[in-house]
Image (cartoon, rainbow, N blue to C red):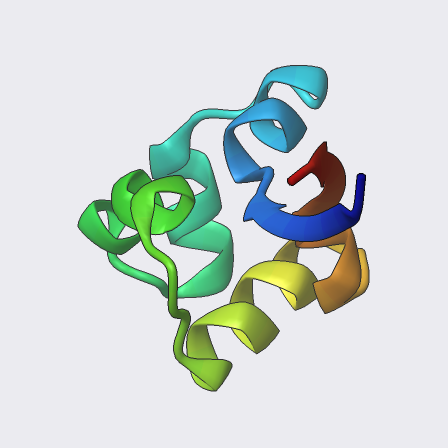
Length: 72
């Protein structure tokens, strides 16, 4: 059985861990709250949004995502 690695956004969990709201992140990053709200649902992300969010949270872009392995 083969394993497939999937990458999924993890922003909601990061915000919960930091006790931070989407509105607070929006103010810090300059990214509209609506874009932050949709972040974990989107499959594609614009580079400027990734950079702005990661800079505001002081984390790497890679940290905005988690890898999951699935059997196929």
